[in-house]
Image 1 (spheres, one colour):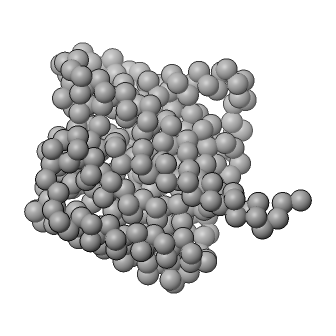
Image 2 (tube, rainbow, N blue to C red):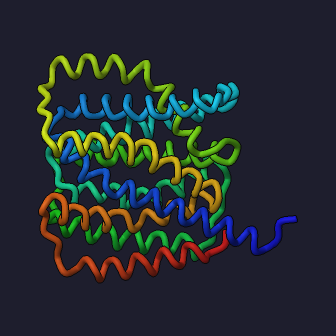
Length: 294
């Protein structure tokens, strides 16, 4: 019989898996910026989704995973529309004119939006302490990322806020489905279901957008396809299934700060001294949300 130690171990493993997903996602914007050096935005999105779908489809075939039940297909469609297509497309379009620091505003708001949609969709009811810590963490992240971008709103903001909504919906449905099927199958089937859209999209985009196979372009494409689009989502959905959607989503409060670190190391962007202060505030908020009971 499973005891308290077993349950605690499962929660710890779930937290670790969700955290690994956050690390993978934190590289997405810098990798996308690299990818845009070699590919057009529509080509990058379509090709990354196809590559991830080939990997996922191969795993599903090799393990002879049965086709999902009809009652799960709507949720998989939402995951595909939000996580596979919507968020990558809208953020990639935004990154054509926005810095990665400014785009990180979206990620700062994503945990709160995901928790809100989770409460509406599946009836979770986090405590007041949880919400207070989540709002404080989101406010700290937003203040930091807006300050990093100079406080100016750009034409990319419409893309970014649209990406926020569709991604939160995809995370909520994916976390719900990961309770009844392995997380890797959730994203795997979502990727495969999107192939009728991504294959024609790639054919059209590649015929209109020029391709330059630079080292950065190829490396960025491979990371967003394998790391962000598949492996990161596998551990992320497993983590959400283990510790719950609201608590897992709050780990993403650290994602904008990680993204800014990668932006400095990989893109040469400047990081102010405010970063460690914001990081400390965010880590405190994460600690509170992880301990708050719904």
